[in-house]
Image (cartoon, rainbow, N blue to C red; front, top):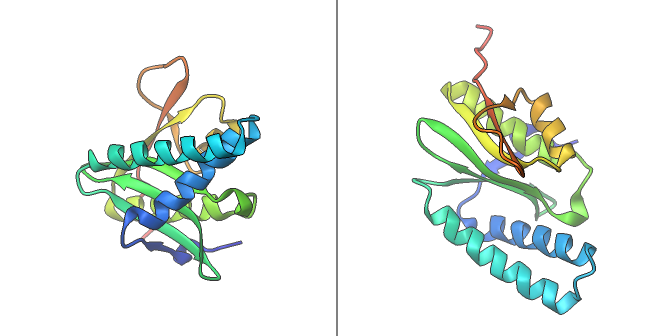
Length: 159
């Protein structure tokens, strides 16, 4: 299992976007979408996602690299609250604790800086909801039909 200390600040969004694209392709292909169409749609979604990130003030990127391969990434919006815009693990690398390590690193940074974290997750994504609850996130904001809004207060250090 990777350690949160292995999660590094990524220099740019290019490599993190590649994980996002692979994730979208995997989701589309698993629903029966023809392979070339899934690849095209994943490219379009990755470009749209990249443009959405441009709307964040000072976005930050986190990456988990194992054996020179980027296996997980995250994007965080800055400000007085940190917004987790996305956490993803390359489909070929799932169920190994990589997403948990990225989330733990982000939470440790927020605790250190005494920042509130918030995020939005599809209410059908039960695995992610359980992971976020385990990390201390709870319901916050309006109840949406398809998404849940979660927030996490910073934990005080025991010093």
